[in-house]
Image 1 (cartoon, one colour):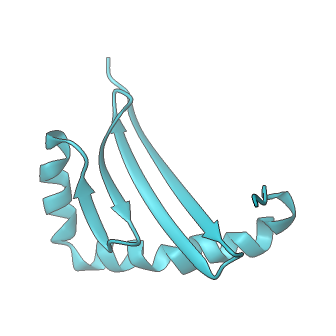
Image 2: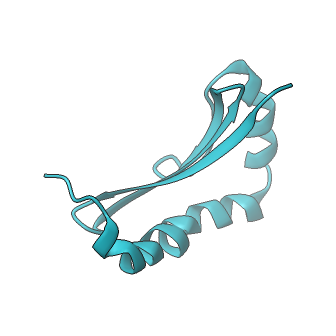
Length: 89
C-alpha cells in the first residue's frame, strides 16, 4: 500500500497584505511537487515530481485557477476565519 496526500496552505503576513498559497503533494509522506503562488507554477521537489510539474505547467487553465486561489481561497477564508486564526508577532 501507499499513501497519497495533498495539503493546501495559506500563509499571511500583516493580515492580507502579503499572502502566499501553497498546494503540496506527497507520496508516502515525502513531498514531491508543489504549487507556490510566489513562483506562479508547479515545481518538482524530487525527481518523482518532474513529470507532474511539467504536465500541470502545460495546462494554462489549471495554472490560472491555482494563481487565483490566493484571492478565492486564502483572502476569502481569512475574512471568514479571522476570529479563529492564530496571530503571531
